[in-house]
Image 1: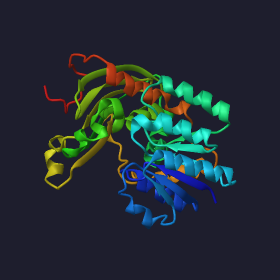
Image 2: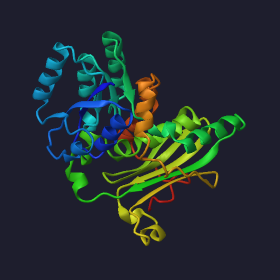
Image 3: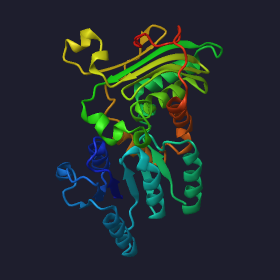
Image 4: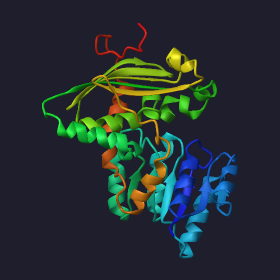
Length: 312
């Protein structure tokens, strides 16, 4: 049985980590969050220690290490801008890390983390769960088997409506979340690279706190993409059914359905990590470079490469 810590225990994604730790037969020894709305712990690990002050959490981890009860893993589900610091804490505490997306906000931070891995002998594992989705793996296999000189036309649309709270939280602050393309889009950009190969062109047509759109060209695909937090962007026929989220990937007219199982992949990630097959720091580089460019790029004029959901 492995001993885990969890940083960011009150966040939206934390229950998936708690469930994955439990489902894989391991122990959550301690959790930390500056917020104390963590009653969900009782459903998974009611005996876990909990701290709202990082200094107290640090002291507990250190005392455990000195007593010979070193943590095996630190799971990191804290706000995006804190990932780099929390990863460094985990490795220096003698643990491996399992970190939520985005791994870091800036591509240059990837190199620093790789140096720290070498210095400490510990490993950073990352949550790139779409790489384990059966539908995405099947799509990648089909692309690999197709003529090498061909490119498919892809439309990627992801609308996940959020209330007024979103922009007032850390997620609405670009310097903390990285902006919408980073916070809700980085998994999809990693998936596109995973399936369609190296990124060759990155154009941004729209960038606001709640919407972003652009064009990406890969070795094997031309991709128009659109991300939104606005429920009014959900197609009317779907809104009429009460739906507030819309996710679609259309490749050469074919719908790629991967909604089922989308939220159930954390346990699979943990299984791979525990088997020594976790996704590495370097495997995040293309996606982090992609969203960093989107965050900083000047807008390009809209043309036939612009996603049809962008209203002129």
